[in-house]
Image (tube, rainbow, N blue to C red):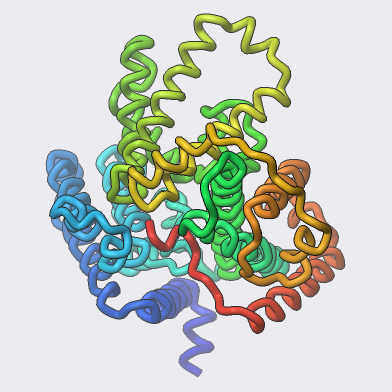
Length: 453
């Protein structure tokens, strides 16, 4: 009787659903590692106190302190071992609370938006669910309070998109298990040094990891969006076919969109953006991407990756200003190939264990030697076995290029799910789910790659 009354009375219904969702999110997060939960709850409590205890004017004045406090929490867990001399990647990841980079950036964006008057002060329950909503808590997408909080206030007030949500959830799971995890064995073997380094092996490492990361991370994003729809909540898209971009600037508008938007809105524009001349714009790009690299992890290789992207973005803008006609006349397919190749090669330092490893991989690009093409049995082994067996570098490279071409020629998961008929969604989801379950039964599961960031 009480439950029926709660669900019929709109204000109480929303409160009941939020409490249920908060409890589910807390339980979900605690399953990974219980002590991490206290870090998350501490961030929620301290930030809400900072919001509730200050007026609009006082909050604006206290904003630098609030932001520094949040960055201090992130630095304590993410960078302190590195600054203290423990540069080993395993040591750094061991003490990293799950998803801390994402929920810290999310709460910082909320605090800035509140100080600018872009969002209102929420109730504690709304705020707690906003920061702990389990579908996107661990690896994004990073959601603005002005987008998610109004949806939480109307939770249960409109039908949930169950069919669309299950379709996206299944598509994302298939990307992760059937594609990303199948590539993982061969990619990991290359980075672990199981093959002698030459140009083909390094290209397999670059394209293999870039492909694995895309299907792994975009798969998580699809699952997050699908789970959100099951609760009647729409989360932002995080990928739009990034490997079809014809420039680095366009790539960053299509890859990890919510992080790119965060860096643009709260860092690049705050530094002056492109309003203060070409030189200042180049400096702002370099600073923004360098800090974006450090956000991904504590290590010189992440710093090099961010600096390289920032420098190339600045050079790209300069080239468009100096030779606009030449850029416009260049065939699009050539520009896409150059962009994808650049991005893939820059994944080498990103994935490398340290800077020395990254330089060794890059140096091996000059060592070309004859490579025997794989026979049909070896080429089809990943498809036949659907396992994380260690494929040779040539097989990894060929599969990666083929998968990128297929992904670039098809619509995004979101667009396909919206346009597909009900029977098509059901047939594809059922088939993929059966394949995923069969695959998971035959091999151990692997955590999502962005769990480490």
